[in-house]
Image (cartoon, rainbow, N blue to C red):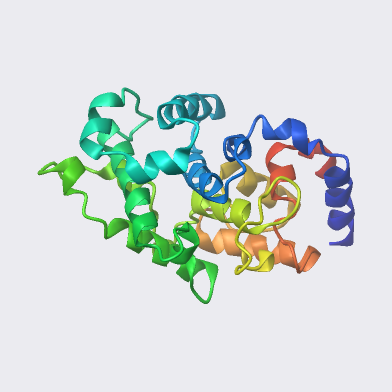
Length: 257
């Protein structure tokens, strides 16, 4: 483990964070200074961060143009019926209805939050329960203004995975990393959650790297695998186990292997 720690630290210290931001979805919330704008664009950008980075960044650019220079105002005030007519873009298996429904859910969650912060829905004893609370709150929103009698909403459910069914919840954990960590590229807006409670945003790239480095022996991408990798990294840095996450995503990892 000492050797792995040394290699990770060397990569971390030589890493160009500023340059890497431009190839990461965090570049979108980085455009804003207002905490609510950061929260909203952060949740949207992380939620669509799957597939080709070129494709989802192109989609997000177009979506944020529609939302304008003040995304929080847009979310608070848009009408689903008007946006369904105006929005001309979709992403992979999320239809225009699914995208409008997702934005509508954010609108309703903010309306119902005493602090107008999404943090309200992540209050729990641990991150797994916090994610479950958020997804259940989101899925309890009445979406009849968007779907009507159309109950086909599989492209919406993709945004709200269930950790209690073993999902690693990669994109929600990515959003939480952005909101909680106070170092490097992350924002550190949510001080009630500690960095050492976070779970690594696990995708196929991080899983393959973790297998090669010995962080996990598991052969599937699951919540248990994400927790095992996080536990290993917590032994390296007990206070900030996700310190190397961004570097592992974007760095030249051959020097680690």
